[in-house]
Length: 439
Image (cartoon, rainbow, N blue to C red; front, side):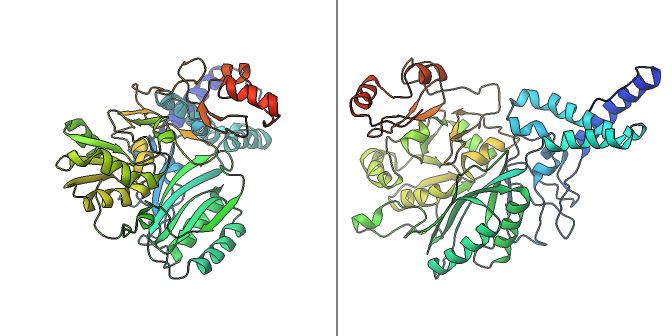
């Protein structure tokens, strides 16, 4: 449909008014969904909901890519998500932070046109409204964990599967006697319903959710498994008592306090993730253990950090769940001053005071996105390099040779030229044996 406008003086006045109202609309809009008590929940990633109970603050409305946290079971069962009061439908494109203000203003102009387009006929008005609405993300990705005793994990898993299937969610959920750990994706309505159901269940009451907008599902299917532990340090294999995260662990630092602790320069920063995660991105100056599994950390720490027990230790991971056990292990090993980044890297990257500064590269995530932006300042950089040409590249691929399947960094050009193999040896072996996946 074409909108025909005659650029007369009234038309120019109209467009100017649209600009003013659009920018004002972008700057001052409040959350569209609030709790039954009229309040919005606090986004502990730093996109903080306004405590005045009338929606997100202006600072939250100018936040980053839309990652929010809500706590299931908060007073009044608060239902809002800070993303809904953020600026534009263009957030799903994950554009650089320096462009977001202009894009937000452009989206505000579109909304301003809608606000004063009474001179358009009905079909034209519907066209404008549908065009802006259709570009907004319709899906969300939820990341969460909760350490709490689940008496019958099998029964809980069966009930939980019914809930997820009814809501048509996809993702990975681990359930154990010690708690639950999950990442799921679904429509905004479905994921909102899921958070509400979790808040209504006494077992999962109080779960904190990190919410990220998405264009579609981030997983191909739903997987719910019952395990002995939701996160394992492998201590039981060494006949040692496991760490109980419900007991005292490392001091939890919010992003602002974490940044200040790093900048003080007197702490050892310990990356609590696997080597292929830290290779994609890590905090500047962090110690990144060359381990392939979280179960390898106890031995690595005993072999490499015994001389640091009197130093301040700052430990971090993707969302916080691994640090709950890792910091507890460090304390049990005799480390005297241990702190952990509350909410993990994802929380830190969205906080308006830190904006992910001091994080080099990107954060590895265990879904189809593979990586997400953390550092939203001018210091953002790529630290990983293509396995073939050594040029900067943060693209992870799996080697086509089925007997290898290694995950390596590979730029688009080399992926095409090298046939998606990680080395000439793998390429030759695949050609010799025929053991390769299609491109």
